[in-house]
Image (cartoon, rainbow, N blue to C red; front, side):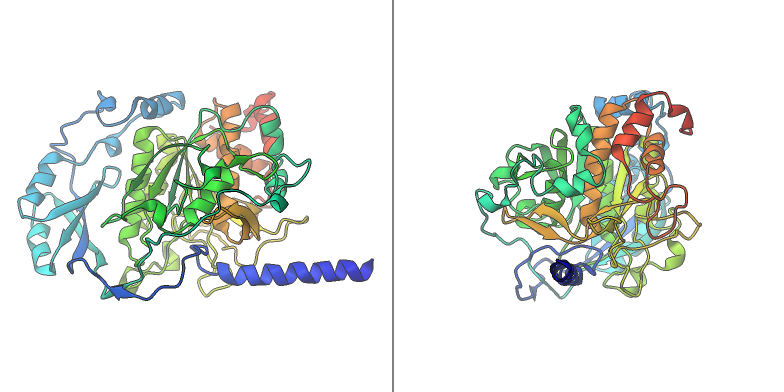
Length: 487
C-alpha cells in the first residue's frame, strides 16, 4: 500500500510538472494550433492615447445618468449608496470634434480616464494634436508590427462529453473538488447559483463558445470586441476565455457544473493575441466601462500585463501601487462604481518578474492566486506573489488552479494550470454569495470573503488570506455578524 501511494504521488507530481510548464506566462495556454507568422496586412501606423484636459462640452449631465448609463447600472450604484461623479460623464463631444477636424480616426475612448485613442499613419500627424488646448498628455501605446501570428482559426469540437467524464453520485462532476474546497456547493444547496447576477468576462477570445452544446444553456447576453482592428469572430480566437467561462457557467449535471451557472454573462474581448502592447490596457478599460454601463455586478479578468513587445512600454516593479499603471488606475475605480473585480494574480512566480501583474495591484479588488487541489492546498509554484509597492498584501485569496478542471474550445473536459482558472472559480462563488447577501457593498463583500480565509489571521504575500470558506462567509453575513464588516 505504501508503494502504491508513493507511485500515485509520483504520477501526480509528473502531471503537475508537465502542466506547470505550460503556465509560466501570465496568459495561460490557449490551445492555438501552431501556425506560421504572416505579413501584417493592415496599413502601418501608430495608436496614441490622448488624455484630455476636462469634460467641458460633454453634452451630458449627472442629473440625467440614464442618458449614458443603463437603468440597471444606476440602480446598482443607488443600492450601494454610491454617487455618480465626473468620471462617469462621457468624453467631451467638443474635444472629440476638435481632434477629428485634423482628419484622424478616434478608435476608442475612456470616460473614467478622460482619454481617447487615435490611430495615425505617422508620428508627424500627432504633433498637431499635441498642440490642441484640449489635449493634456499624449502617449504612444501601439505601433504596427511587421508580421503577426494569425489567431482567428476554426477548430473542430465535440458535440458531447465522454461517458467516462461522468462521476456517479457527484452532481458537480469533474468540477466537484474545486468547488468543494471553497465550500461553494453549500451555496448551491440553498439555491444560490448566481441568479440575478450579471458577470462580464474580459478575455482574449471564446473559441467555439457559440457552438459547443454545453455552452448553449448559458445565459449569454451578448459580446463585444474592443480590439482594433476587431476579430472576424471572438468565437474563432483563443479558447482561453472559453475555459474561463466554463468554470463559472457550464451546467451539465454529473459531468460539470460551474460555480455560477444561473448568472448571466457578457463576453468582452480586450486581449490582442497578435501583439503585446500597452494599448491592450486601453481596450481592457473600455471593456470594463462597457460592463459598468450595462449594469454588470462582477467582472472576471484572467489577464495581466507587465512586459510588452516594445521595452519603453513595459512596466517596472515600482509601479505596482494600484494607481500608476493606466489599467490599474481604472480597476481601482470599480468598487466606487459598485462592481467587484476578480482578477488573476498572474503566473510569474517561477520567472524573473515573480510579482503580480497589472491590474492585480489595483485597490478594492479580489486578486486570486492558485493552489494545488489536495489539502493542505500548497501554493502553485507559478502563482505570482506580492506585496504591492505600497505594502498591501497580495494576492488577496487563493483557490484551486494547479490544476483545475475546465471545458476547452474543443468541447472537452480537461485539466489546465494557471491563476487564470482559479479566478473564475472564485468569481462565480462571489456572485452566488452576493446574490444571498445583496445588502453588501463591494468593500464589505471583499472583506467578508477574505476574513473566512484559512490564513486570515496571518495573511502573507504568497497565500494572501488563504483559501476562503464561502459557506462560512454566508453564515457570517446572514446571521448577525455583519457589524464586523467595516464600511
